[in-house]
Image (cartoon, rainbow, N blue to C red; front, side):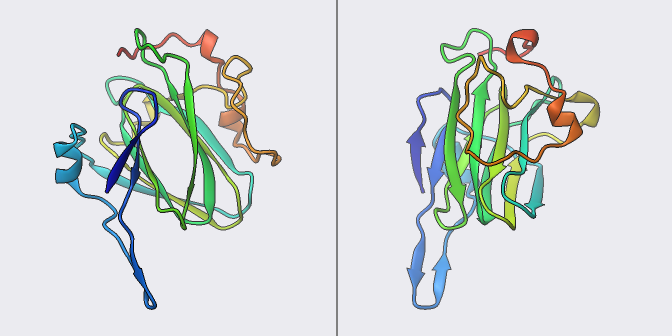
Length: 183
């Protein structure tokens, strides 16, 4: 596995080594000792799997508030997504900055999103399956987010009509959010 720096401290892209031949492929999808040895010692406790039936499904930008903050290791096993992480850590030199990458079943990339980040994605094709590990259990009472189309963030989402939940249309802008996260 190779670690690719994103320019935002703590937010890294993982590119696993894929062994392929005429039968298909094999790869290690997760290796705790590799992350630990790379200084990324997350203790993941829950796996999640989401399927979106159409292109344009937009989930995010989500996070959990303290004391249930979560780091996430995210990837796609069918289809593809435009994946975004936003730094919400007060005192961080990259506070309010975002990073975006295409994750797909064919590129095998994983994004490690540390605690203190908002995270979201838009599906780029029908039948997309998104999976992720988290290092804290889901706490619905601490679920929060930032509006996906915040003009101050100016994230260049794909030109696909977004399919959103009611919850995701009512999230606040970054400037109206008082961050409890620190660098």
